[in-house]
Image (cartoon, rainbow, N blue to C red; front, side, top):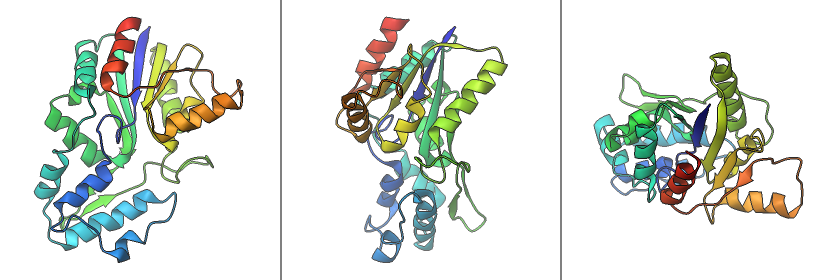
Length: 241
């Protein structure tokens, strides 16, 4: 019986939003209003496609984008936590489910030297085309009305658990670590022995507190433990090992 660590990425593994961090590769570090105002709620990935097209139009090279992304800071204690996971790969599986994109996450993890701690990354596919422009696609399509059109994290997690079960792997405990509103949906498929860990002061913690105050015991079975640094998650994980 193994342990599964599930991480969101932005404002969880890293201490910022990777999709807005990329603006630092622009001379003025800002978007024009024509791009900024094109965002529609729930359609962030399409918006990021336009952002990356604008960045390409400014002749920003793929190498420049990568070098900027590699400077994003990790959340305090997270590199220690990933190191612990890396040292215990026989008993701990680790996945990332993120609304960022594959290139950003791969670059950032590679730069940290801790990419091997993460077994799989589920996110929006991204690549550079022949003109040197980065293209971002939606992770998948789904019918969940609670989540952005491009990604339902619950669907990703349930499919992963099903595939692992088919391969003979079951988890004694799952830790789900996140911060945002789109991290709420996957917590509903967690069991009583599992732990959802919302970052203190962020949207997920507020949503879970609201659920608790409504005394809706049927919807969320997992234990809730809030965190403010990766060190607290590390200590919680160590205590269960």
